[in-house]
Image (cartoon, rainbow, N blue to C red; front, side):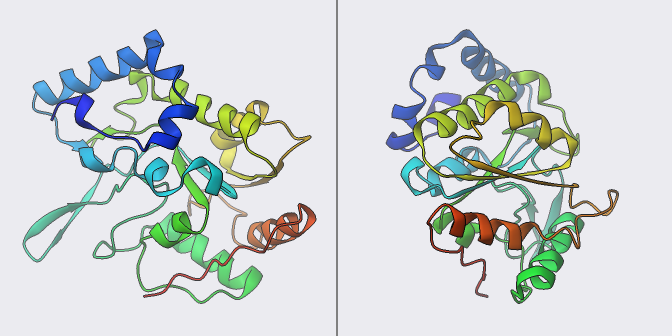
Length: 234
């Protein structure tokens, strides 16, 4: 897979056009291409690398949920190996078991605003409703967590957060865990609202019961926007 064949929709390309000319972005492409040349299996599949951007154009963004690293595992379904990672933070394909962090996200949704818990972990429907499920790092080597952190992806994801802060209006940024909270400095709080919480991982404590989704609904109302429909249909 040639890196240059991985596509981003025109709306994001225009908003981020200066980033694609910077040295760090060429470094990302070089690292990615070299990893493929060495035979690395990279998650998510190449066509889903920018899935979060492609599903949620800039003008449609209402809420940003920031993750860190793509899932590096896979699941065998009907004899086929399916990557957990699908280019959306916290989301997995429908046929893949729901990961522990996402189970806690669903528990908190149900607890705080009464949303029924879905039977699958595919969050695509949220993206279509205006939730940008952005990972700070866009790729990972199979079975090797954090393996592409050195590629330079964080420069790119930081630029996305800055661009949203500058060019979009009245966005809710949901920053869960210490890693995500560090991104608060990129966001203009005169224009946008930041909602923080512990990470939803079972290894952390305090996400379930934090009221983050209720806070998001209240923040949207404060900003004069319609509440988010968090329901995920089976």
